[in-house]
Amino acid sequence: MIAGPFESHTLNGRRFTCDAEDDAKWKLGGKNNEVKPNGDGTSRVVQSRKVDSIEGISLVIDFDNGDDEFLQDLKNSGKMFDYSGTANDGAVFAGSVQIVGDIELSFKEGTATVSLQGKIEKQGI
Image (tube, rainbow, N blue to C red):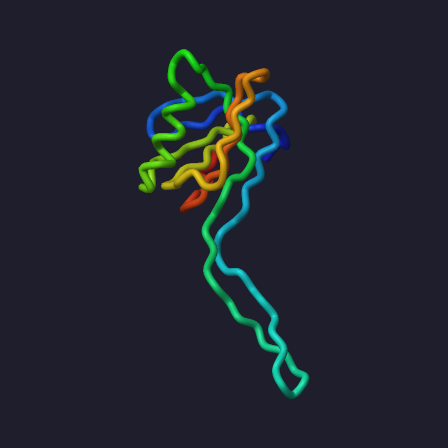
């Protein structure tokens, strides 16, 4: 994959372009390892599952189109929704996600920063 920002993200059928300086971070799901001490001085590994996430997505939004309300409604639904994102090299990431954390709106930049968690897989180019 060529480094650079995403080109666009589609959330529940609505396509958003990205800020050209977007620095979204994909965190792979799978297992989380935690090393815990035993009473005799040895250690053990405890594993738990964790979901995939893409954090710090900077979406270009149109307030007149209600993009801000659309994002808030998705979050408020509490239900997973379809997601796809296209990287600048054509790689596509897709899955079922939900918005987590705060939706940060920048009136100056015309952007909304969101983070997504769920099942996200790289589809290829």
